[in-house]
Length: 308
Image (tube, rainbow, N blue to C red):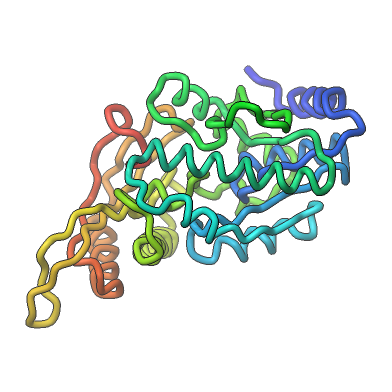
């Protein structure tokens, strides 16, 4: 069994030995993985670490403000709005693997630009075990592992061998706030992997609103304490519906809820039907472009947690 206090002490020492007096940047998303890494590395090298939060325009509603507020006074923090750059890069792309690779490449381009400004030589990433296991098993690539050849920065991955439940325990040992520790996982490529087909500004608006409704209703009744993830997916299917007394033709949204321990497997639990119906009615009534809501009931395996 992993001794978490020993892990923290050993990690800090290893980071000191690897980075020494050089400068490093960390790809900070605001999730538990990169947050734990940021604290570990800050404890090792202090202000030689710069935490870079890239707003790729694929975030959940109000996420950019929440992350900035949480970290701007805790770390040497830098916010970058790169939403136009990412949307332009994803224009016309429908294949999910290609989306992930494009997003990973743009991230690295930004990090290398920023690293050059402060002469940083290291890039810290919050890669954990399920990321590289899925990538090596060719289940799906992860944006933080799809690194381009010839990259100048040397990658440091302090929690690479850990699983999400272990990362949460370390987060508590490092005195990170409960709100952050218990936050549901969110994919690095963001809402791009929750849109089937091409990513557009219009589709991002739809899936962002739907996802916010799911989150709001689940947290309102306290089910977030029992669920691993809960979110909405925008499909590329248009289906007939009725709004008012007229025929309508709009998007199909799928809602998904799973329980898990480490993301290697996941199950869809039986939720109170009233909650599912409430979420469905709110999405179709508040988002005019949506006519149908479906519920995903497939476990992992054979499905993955995310749709793409």
